[in-house]
Image 1 (cartoon, one colour):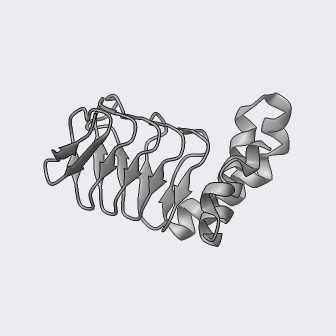
Image 2 (image 1 turned 45 degrees about the vertical axis):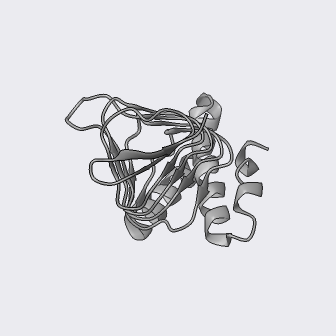
Length: 160
């Protein structure tokens, strides 16, 4: 059921379901030599269609927990070294990666809701249950249970 682990999170979101299905199908190639060979056609389709045509650069070997929800795929760019927890939401024009070549990448906790046009850059940690407002530039650690907004992002609200 690995390839359907995001299905419930995308109920009513057919684009999100289709993307998540092919993302997980291509990711099967990271689970052993036999699957790597068998999944070559899916990896090629995923790379050409989703990355080149749709414009969602989310590498199939990225470490993303189950329950990924993607509302709009356009202009999402995620570095392959980013770690994203479970039940996270991504929106369009979001960039998550390093600040410089060969630099560290963010680790994002569970239940993080990322608004449109957000940049999360550098070797930082985003805690669980965080909401990041649209257009925010996140360059430093964010504690759990926070709402952040702005450029640079600042904590608007934090619950215990």
